[in-house]
Amino acid sequence: MDSLSILYPVIGMVFLTMFVATRMYTHRVSFMKKNRIHPQKVQTRSQALDQLTDTRASDNFLNLFEMPVLFYVACITLYVTNNVSLFLVVLAWAYVALRIVHSVIHCSYNTVMHRFMAFISSTIVLFSIWILIALQLVFGIHI
Image (cartoon, rainbow, N blue to C red; front, side):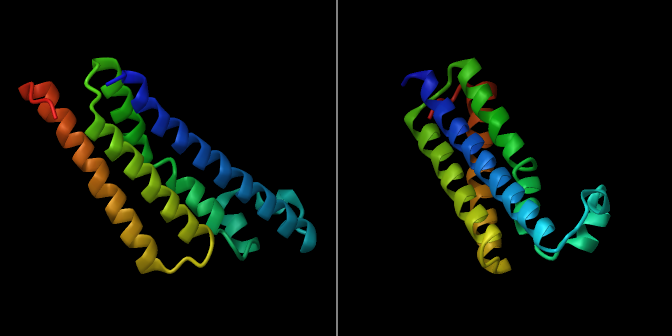
């Protein structure tokens, strides 16, 4: 399998992050204009929480820099060590798909249990990727 194929899901995650950042920016700017909130009144996170009534997109944006960091490192590790397999690429795309579901839920209707199910599913996929990486690097088992 071509090692570059593991980088395509990485690009997918970057585009998801760009989309959520754009949504956060456009929503926040329009809300601040509509409610005449001066930018200086939201200079810190606690001030923003006091002024802004909807922080779903910004909360999701922050989430995209938590667990996905392990995803990025996993994909780069697979690429650098040339241990890419079709199964791992499928798992990587599954992770991206579940993070997209998580972001859609988080940025829209935000039912916590739905969001949690997407989150825990993506976490299981991510941990599975790391277990497979460990098996490859430590024991030489290739899947």
